[in-house]
Length: 305
Image (cartoon, rainbow, N blue to C red):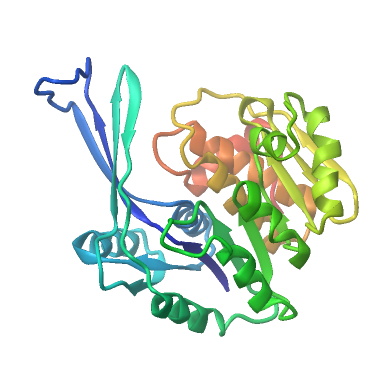
């Protein structure tokens, strides 16, 4: 089974407001509402690709219930833990000239709530996949990623981590199956600027030396690089297409890699499937569907078999 954790999920309220101005009444041209959060995005794309997952995390109030309702409408299995204080986040994204965002805080999460999450993780075993993705709310221990990795150590769970800075670095000693920084995040860790696929290879190697089994580096229009656990380097240009919405593209790449690896057991095919899935999401307003991913696969002459 695949599990994803989103510690601070949201409802993303996306409004298109042509000529948006502050200090006056603005009217929307278009409105959309989606469940938000990196782990949630991974679960949705996995569902689109035909792989069942269970989305874990915390929910609070009427917003939390609506997040659950939205996931149910996407046929995404979820086991969010009810939190007593506060409400889950509503993030407002305004598209009008320059894009603006207003992100909510989220609920209070107690030690008891975290203990409940740990009890759910107790059922994970050999061969399961756990995706830890995104930032940690201030009300939670900033060691939560490494704490979870330590708890699951030795069980044969394949842990995937998509996070930044210390959240990422602190899990390396537990040998996560896959980590996915982008080139900017990777450069920030080492205090360098990484612009080309060749640039990222030695720094991806440093993270593998520190413990990561596989290092996948997304680079938007520059493509991607995978340094796998055998030491082999896989590189790909970005597939051709018009970028419409980059939000969720990295999460889609993670989902595509997981789906590709579970289907084939081949790192190169998993890598290319991740690249195609991330690109398919970037080329559309919503997270990629299987048919949209297949279009991108065909465009680069790749077949996932």
